[in-house]
Image (tube, rainbow, N blue to C red):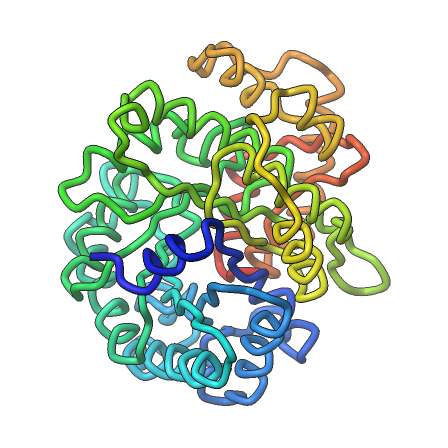
Length: 393
């Protein structure tokens, strides 16, 4: 049972999710190193205004300010005993704003990664991670969310733990991965791998997709590759539709006049939203750097768009910017890591530039990455991306 989300998809066809949390909270006074989740208690009025700004911009789905709400994240802020309190409050504030709206709004309980590497590569067991996710999910349900929104995942082990844990709370869930490393997640999963993992789960998510990553062009390429993988799995031919989610970053983060600024324009995000629908997504939103103004432009674009054929590489690059060599190889049907390996010195140069940018952001977590609409390519690298998974910026 998928409740309100399924109902609205049936009624509206395509749904618009919200934008960023962390980068918009910075504009409301959040400081580098602060926990956004603590603001659910300290500044509930500012959290309410952030939710309301996206409702006013036209979002059908609002994600709670709980991305880093697991005990593993909150222990970094001496708040490990406040998991239930902070998640309940984050959900309650969202529910209160949704009930004031003139239309039905889905509240997605945001559940981000633990920030730990799971066994066998790390120390955290799948069972312990599942317990942490279950604790957070129960609190979000208590606070009034409609669905669990498991996002920015990168490994099979962690997403399986998240689904196991969240399923204990008894609400439907969606799962999105961050495809940010040359057409793959930080832990090496391709869009085809993501589809296979999700379809093989004992409790299959209501929807799957990609978020964050390195900008709109790469995200749309990932959605095209996911849709192709679903077709290969004969899911669409059997008329058992798998809902696809697309939630892209808003350009590349740049350090300008003492603060991080994302380069994506309203025009680029509007174009992205149209191409995401053409690629096969039915839930479209923005991630890092996406403001209510971007969402408003996306709302207008979606309301006036008639779905076209899935975009090919030429269309994606012409309208949104360059795509990584790994994603290009997957679009050609070449799924091996070797097929997408970097070979151009220019691409390596942009990787070094991105490392320097991320080096600055070591203590300014999860600003994510992105692309301009001008065709500037930026390859990501795993060590740098791992520093950016702290907040839903």
